[in-house]
Image (cartoon, rainbow, N blue to C red):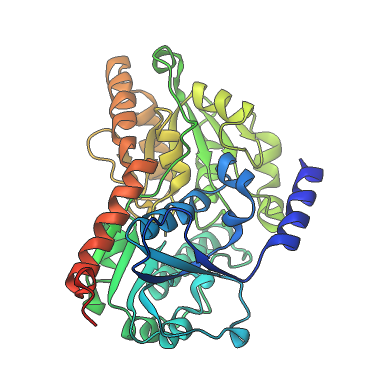
Length: 395
């Protein structure tokens, strides 16, 4: 895998360009131009799109397809561009750009270069200042319990949100009401986007009965404290009758702090990075009944929606950005004592209820498919273009 990653990165370095001009693969009739500020990687490495290493690789290509079908040729700017080298013509009907995270730091710069375009702020996460506030509180909560400090991760330090909002006509927001509410104060139209998941995910009827209500899966990316892994390690260390499977990023300071729990608790299993649809992924999602993620700040936690496509029941915070309706469990009190009680109760569900919640979780996961992403994106785009007269070519 290491060798493969090395060659993948080498190929990408040779092929990738900071800006890709005139993408028109799906365009039958050109009416105008669009500008997308996101990532150009999916245009050069189809293998990453097919493997679904991240949902946004496919989503970039789908955005391009939708824009092409509307008659727009698309220029794509990579999020790592050297902004001082960028020069643009003011020729675009619409500009769609990352804005919420550090990857979107150039949204205002680019928006100012195309004043005649309708400008859509693509928010893959909550409003940056509010997100930072929640992350700081979570680290403070850690420090108060452990009398120690760790490297502050996932802070957004390079976004001027107020400048960006002054240039924005509409917001496309990935997430539930939590994430969308963080942008309400700016008074911009907000359209919800539903993230996609791999089309290779599937579920067999017999798997519902194979899963155990005593086994929980933590499936997260980087930022272990932000996503609440520290809370889970402390909680499950006192629940030896329950199993916690951890698929997480390797963070040295975090691992050092929790080395005793990791070494001594036989019910906590560390699996490291786990590829979606890989052998270990299928094994873990066949035996675990719950996907647990007490995150403090997400757009939509696609790690959870991905395993919901396998029927796992979400056990999450409101800030994880997932609608749990009547099948999932919402973690409100994150004190260790409260988490222990809540998780113990969840693990003791009657068999029929446990089975019913799995089925409902899988059915709800239909909101997190390629089709749901396409529909939500195209619906929002058409409404914005209509509101600004672009469907009639009024400029």
